[in-house]
Amino acid sequence: MAHQAVFNHERLAEIRHHHLLARMTPNYEYIPFTRVENMERGTVTMLLAVVLALVVREVSALALNPFTTPPTKSVVNFWGRLKIDCGVSVWSAWGPTNSKGYRIHTRTILRHPQNGGAPCPPLTETDWDPWFNSSIQQKAFRMEERLISGQNTQGYSFRTKRQASTIKPRDFLFILDMSGSISSADYAREKDNIAKLIGVICGTIGPGNDNNRAAVITFSTDPVINFDFNDHLNLADLQAAVRNLPKVSKSTCTGKALDLGQTMFVASKGARSDFISEKEVVVLTDGKSNCGPNAVNAALALRNSRRPPLLLFVFAIGNHNAASRQEMAAMASAPTSYHLFHFTSFIQFEQVVDFIISNPFGCAPIEVGR
Image (cartoon, rainbow, N blue to C red; front, side):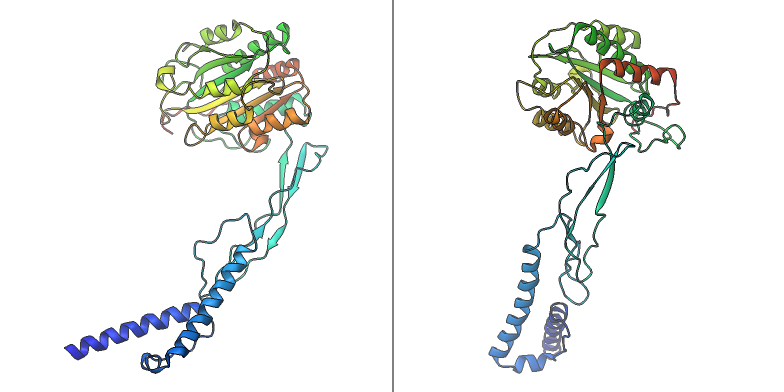
């Protein structure tokens, strides 16, 4: 029995040694345990040094070639060689918008895959330019797809494509600009059309858990919580409250309003659990922030204040320079083409809302806990 135990111990050591070298060394030739045992110590040390050098060489190849795609789960292939994934550059800036409102950006291959590593991802991507001056009908259809339907679907075929069987109720936070750059007449249009828009969003306002709810913050230099999610649980009452919002004509401190938004999605403000409702934010503004904390950082913090991150839509009204466009796009959830809506004026915003109202579409039924 003692002899058998020694034999099993030696065989186990031999098998482990053999599998280790077979995985790490190409063209490995099996050497019986007894021969390895009788090798001179210097020979064994040299063999291990060669194996270590091969590993260091391939790890160094990875370090010297940065890439944006994640590594494969198994870093060693069947022959013991390290898998090297395809490495690509970051995306280029978006190219010019074509006559139909689309644009492309590209990336290049920095390292080709080796030894069975992950293949290269697509090198070209096409997207809709949210700043494209599209028709009233196009703007209305995109708003239906992304916001009103509650399904955030892709493409212009929303009215004919198969819709989801059910959608989840939503808690909407509207953050509305009332700064001095917005005239009293335009502010009245802003409020009226937000009120009308709330009325056509799938899943009407109501007291039940299978209804939507809405809260409103208005802002200029300082933000104001006008009402919570459970203050107006009837559509007519809510629309009247929106139309009666007061105006304070000062600066545009968008970041302050977004920071205040982080305090809203709690039970004490009438927000429901994530099991019951989705959480979405709509920010309407006519220009770049000009005071207070950084609006982009504040938007990112608000979006990431929930898990999973909440959706943040931006309604950009009027003409915007490059800096303003960059801020609006960075505030909105990704992809920007889904969550940023541009209207050249408050009158055009009204025309889009009126088109949606006059061309109704079917909504999927609400299901709590979907």
